Amino acid sequence: MTAGRLAVVVKGWPRLSETFIAQELVALEGAGLDFDIWSLRHPTDRKTHPLHDRLKAQVRYLPEYLRDEPKRVARAIGAAADLPGFDAAAAAFADDLGRDDTPNRRRRWGQACVMAHELPQDVAGLYAHFLHTPSSVARYAAILRGMPWSFSAHAKDIWTSPDWELREKLSARHHGAAFGATCTAFGAAHLQGLADTPARVDLVYHGLDLSRFPAPPERTLRAADAPFQMMSVGRLVEKKGFDNLIDALALLPASLDWHWTHIGGGALDAQMRARADAHGVSDRITWRGACDQPEVIAAMRAADLFVLPSRIAADGDRDGLPNVLMEAASQKLPILSTPVSAIPEFIDNGTHGVLSDDAPDRLAAAMTDLATAPARAARMAEAAHARLTSEFLMQPGIAHLKRRLTQMLAQGG
Image 1 (tube, rainbow, N blue to C red):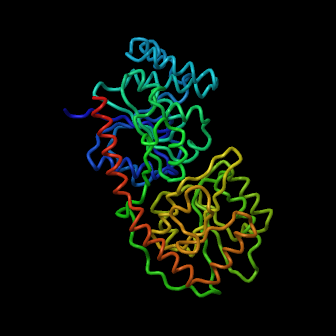
Image 2 (cartoon, one colour):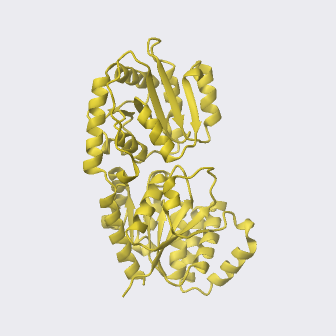
Image 3 (cartoon, rainbow, N blue to C red):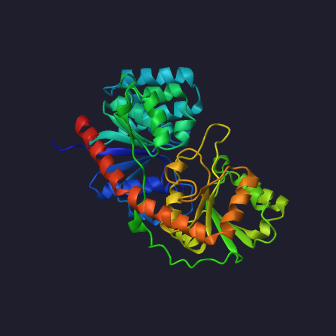
């Protein structure tokens, strides 16, 4: 029997900061998986990556706020009572609402009703990217329609979701996911400890599709006293640690001729620029804002050091294994980061890059050391590229996901 089609739930589409999702979906489509995308939000980025243009799947947008499309929502909620899983779905929603009575929770129920009402009949299963709100919508919609669902978990969704919710999304008794994937061993161990069976959660590294990237440039060894070009890519949010990095830049020795380029937007943009002004280093910083991937790679090829000072935010949010580290490695760009979350799964300190404490004085010392030891930095960049190409390519993870998703669809068909 031919398996039915898949519906993929995402928080927003397209998003510049989520190239790992675009890479995966383009690869799954190329591997023969047939799906539509159901997005909880409309796009806000002014640019897209070339990857987004390659995806052929139809994109459907659910009501971002229920008040925006009252007739569509009313029709769906009215029709939900006739769906086979309405009683079970309503009970699951009521249980969740009793512990989390928020507009966000009520919105997820409304979006799930719309999705369940509008899903084509040939859809046999759902797959959500992120274990928080997209998985809530997928879970309610799957229960309503009587079909299996699955998820891919990443970082914030793991570390800022309450344990009770994670446990129920990972439990068959509570209409949990048929399976889940997550992109770090650190995150997988945490979720497996909450699941009714550890087998419900798979470790699947995103990896990198090197066919999308140019071969690394022929880098000539930089003289220790030459200008030192540093760069970072990441949203200006607390967990990225750019406040500490700006403080560290202000501590660099006067003898070092440095420049730092930042790529990315974010809620703390004005604060970070003001911080740089206060330290008197703004004339050595270029704020490029959001860039597409070709622009990011071009910047990496021209830089001497990639810096990502990740940390754990006050609310528990943290990075997983940022794809930008692998992208930097693809261009043999030396890396300075921190030993947060799953970053050490790719970078062994002193072998594939430097993992520093995120205190400004320690970051400053690490940048200075790498600037004055270009041969050591180049050796680590070569080692990171070798590790990327031997252990962190995309294809094994895509083959695993396709197999798991195909099995789920056969179960739901």
